[in-house]
Length: 398
Image (cartoon, rainbow, N blue to C red; front, side):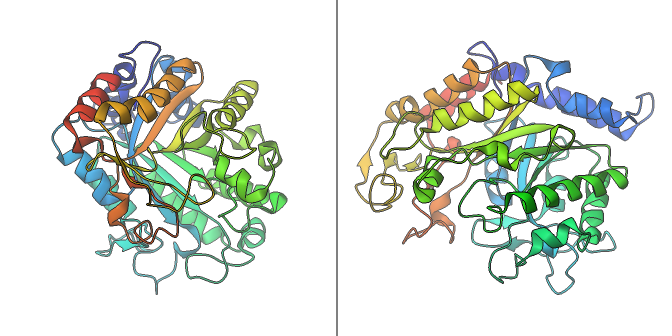
């Protein structure tokens, strides 16, 4: 999903392959290539200034979803691939997948993938399977309520150094990746579903600690992404709109700003801001701070691109999830979700520099499947329909 001012804009955005292969050579310091050793040089190369009309396309968000996209044979290698890590488990030897890192504390590859209900995850395997792509990592630091993935009081503990070993473990992994890494620390900080993040001061302190320790470890290839949910559903749950600035860790700690985009841009079933208005809030703040923006999670929620249907998303949004299924033509689906999405990217190409698309059969994954306790998501795999696939290819201009 690269984008540009022109309809063929993603093509330049497709810079992905060439840019990242070039950057990989620079990072590797092979033969006649010059090694990038200055952190600011690398972060600049990962931001917008050197490639002013380029946008990076990342695909995720699990091993199967990425491989189904790449192995379909319809698309070039994406500029980035997306995965997720359970921060509190990165050094937990009793948790074989080490928080989905796929690497033990000695740096050895583990055989185990982990599936928390949203597809198999293994960051090391994803990197090895996609050597020409950057890594986009969603780092979960939510506190939860005692589940193995989370740690009650964890944000405060991170801030005082109790999890520095986990940060240093992550730092070693990122250095060894030998490619750009976009680290989305505490992603969707404003989402009511992420327990603990409502304590804004604790969230900020934990975020800053992670960045500080990564820098102590001399990590040169990581850009730090501060990602809002930008979700009307969150505002419906909260009953009001929250100012995202309350979570801002500071200019020195944020390389990119990010947001999620799942819903139709202008639909407003309740007295809340629309998807477009909430995205605008992030983009306007990014312009004020002179930061590039990543649409870090995006998919046409409620649509099944294989079956060509649309169903209710959530009782909070449009009705009981999965019900009122309607048949749609490929063109109707494209016009309803994809075209407004791409139009928004084109209209804001001064600041949007990366887009991460979730190319998943959500309905086959336990967390998202019937009876749809997490809402209805559908099937967002763009390769499943010839018309949508061709429109996608035309838009990204590979």
